Length: 228
Image 1 (cartoon, rainbow, N blue to C red):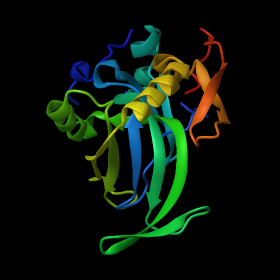
Image 2: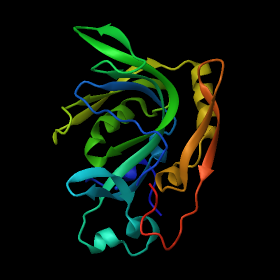
Image 3: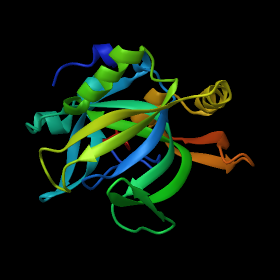
């Protein structure tokens, strides 16, 4: 069983219909609230799924996750550690116009903002854990602030970095709302390992999405890959 907690992540882990935070371009960012605090982060080892030279996502290392023979490991493929948490994404700022975005002047640049207001999986490699670690050291919890997650690096750049910037401190009402949303989500481990493959949502009148249900799938012991 994989260890939980940010402090237990080693130093240098599948396909799913559960939405994941993704920043693809230099300067792209999103505003989010953590629904999982740092000591409940979940990490596991993954292999890259490749078709020729084209990257098509990740699949879990069965040797690490289930103590089963792993075809990718046997073929000499090196696994990587990926760290996961539940977050609530409120807005996403793109650097170019997208469908359903609104142009917002921000300093010397214009971003194209899309209102999201839904929970997502937050997934990073070990190489990008430093920025989060600094915030944990400063505030002791990730559950009481808005944060901006910002990408620095062009698409395809191997030297891409990410920063986690403080936003406003959450009101007591907002914190209570996030607790309710977090409680309605499936197990983080089940989502990461592919035992849950989608979230059904119902939008509340307040703009928050509530009443999450999940579509569960069994993990077949004979499957070559877990479906995440």
